[in-house]
Image 1 (tube, each protein chain N blue to C red):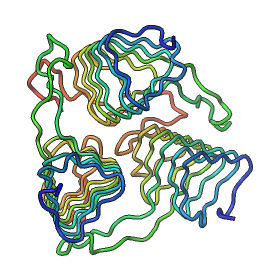
Image 2 (image 1 turned 120 degrees about the horizontal axis):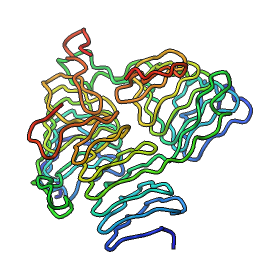
Image 3 (image 1 turned 90 degrees about the vertical axis):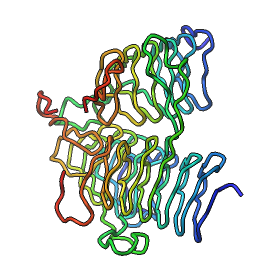
Length: 141
Length: 141
Length: 141
């Protein structure tokens, strides 16, 4: 078994990549979108919708020294992404290393998620900004 | 015939998707770019240039209720996109549901078009911002 | 020989496109990422890392006149991109016509590089913004 746990009614689309599947958990009724890339260690809740071509970053190059080239500095530690329940991730979304996506969040198509946001946020843009709270009727931006 | 109307000298590149082609209209000398996705009902004028990998969104998930998961709330209505004459759409542009692109507009590469802009605008960014009016020589941003 | 010059230990990934390779120079220990598109005339230094799907724009449509369609106005001149030594270009980065990337720069994943920045900048977003200087510990944005 390649995942650590898989819920009921999970839909994995064609072209979905998930490394070796080590320590990946996914809840009920959730999906991995077409051509997505999900690294080892990702934790995905229930009722998570994901559009095509989503990419979750697992680690970064180290770049702390400027006296030697970055290519000689290796990689930083892997930091897993957590996606809570009832999250809608649009197509072509990029999720940076270690992000935590709270319950009820919408990540708009083509967003580059660089920060964490509260539950029920609608988030979009590159870099990611809060568009509004789903429970409000007023737009912040 | 799969389109509602097609002008003269229209160029449809490889990998172009256009749903069932229902109610799609396209004018003279216009093109659909490589791997573009154009939903049913799209209206495209004359002399429209389109780079590769452009994506037009046709509809959204409904997310008005927060007491039940979004995955149980279905889809909103389809809202067709209108592209007027003499528009240049760069590569990898995403056009959100129901947008109206006015005559003479340039949409820069990789733009996510979330709003409508006046004729002869140069628009770019994610989310989309006005860069300048083509008839001005001054940059706004 | 298709490149003007190629250093030692250069890694060209599958799907890399580089036009006819005319006047392309690339230094030691550098790589062209999976599915990248590098136009003729590009100059790439040593120790340059490049993620998948990077795209370098070579030229633009001309759009100075608004009384005739852009499709009839042809193309502007090709302006080559220069990438200095020790640059890390993340995946899905787009580099606009004629940009100059200085030594030690990091271009974050999915950035659309529309401006030039000083050496050792960390740059991201669409359009591109300075995130911070690698030699500082403080974030500007």
